Length: 113
Image 1 (tube, helix red, strand yellow):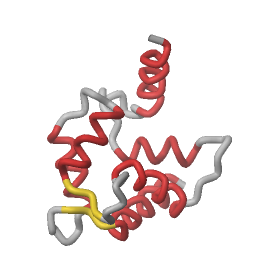
Image 2 (tube, helix red, strand yellow):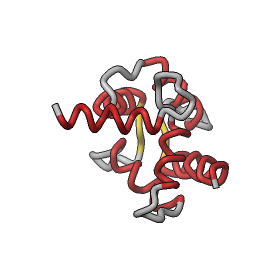
Image 3 (cartoon, one colour):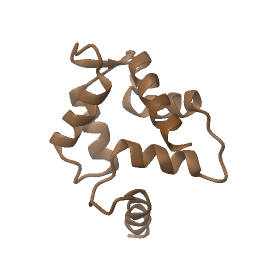
Image 4 (spheres, one colour):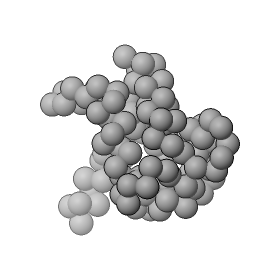
C-alpha cells in the first residue's frame, strides 16, 4: 500500500500539465531536475535504455515498449506507446535503436535545461 502511495505521489509530481498522464518529456524533465543526481543526457539515456531493453538486443520493439510502460504505470494506454514509438523511430523500421533513443533523450534534455 505504501508503495502504491509513493508511485501515485511520484506520478503527480511528474504530471506537470495535470493531464492525467506522464509523457516522456515530463519524465525526463523531472529526472534532469533531481537535486541528488546530476545526470548528463548520455547517462540518462543509458539508464532508461536498460529499462526498455533488458535482454540487451540493441533494439526496442513496440511490444517491449508497451510492456515496460505498463510495468511502471499499469494504466498507460497502447496509443501513448504508439505515439512515443513514432517520435523516436526516425527511420520507421518498426523498432528503436540505441542511437535513435539517445538522440531523442538529448533533444528533451536540451529543451528542459
